[in-house]
Amino acid sequence: MNCFVYKSLRRAETYVYLRERDAFQLLPATLAATLGPLNFVIELALSPERKLAREDVETVIANLRGPGFHLQLPPPPVETTQ
Image (tube, rainbow, N blue to C red):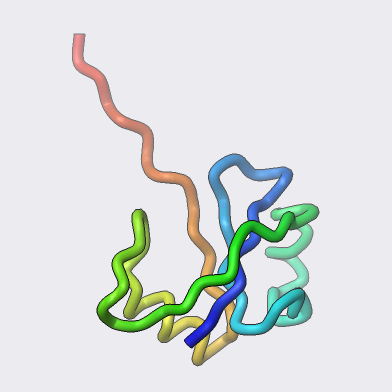
């Protein structure tokens, strides 16, 4: 399954995976407004064998087959002890 990855220009380290290129209508209006403009990053071929840096590939595929998009949020902040 191919997908298209976009970076939010308003929200740091926030990415959207879409099942179709430039299919922004798949995003709920409130989410699209929060993310602001999206910049195309890469086209990926997804399969259960593929590893993604921050996301579970099976979850991404399920979301692309369902609502048609997957939202990748920034990683949680690292706690430091002093």
